[in-house]
Image 1 (cartoon, one colour):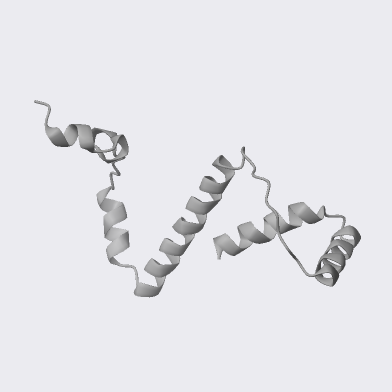
Image 2 (cartoon, helix red, strand yellow):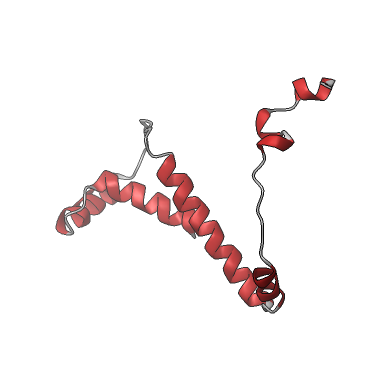
Amino acid sequence: MVTKTDFLMPDFLKKENRPVQYFTEEYISQCRKMSLEEIVEKISEQQDFFWQMHLAKNFNESVLISLKVPKNLLKQFRKKCEVTDVKYQSQIKNLMIDWLLK
């Protein structure tokens, strides 16, 4: 039976489109033995992995931006990139990714 909410609900929220995780008894038993610090560390690792995968998937499309930067800052940044043999725009992107993964 089709209801009103079937038309209003986005596809990704519909029950049949949601991913399901299954855990073994062994995994659940290991999780119960973890300390709070270990749990926090595990969550942090999973978030890092999520961002790495999410960013890698979505790097196909780039957007042109305009950014005002103090002249001397840009000059020094470009010099350091040149010395280390890194394209300065690539380095800006790397800094953005590193910041997101923190």
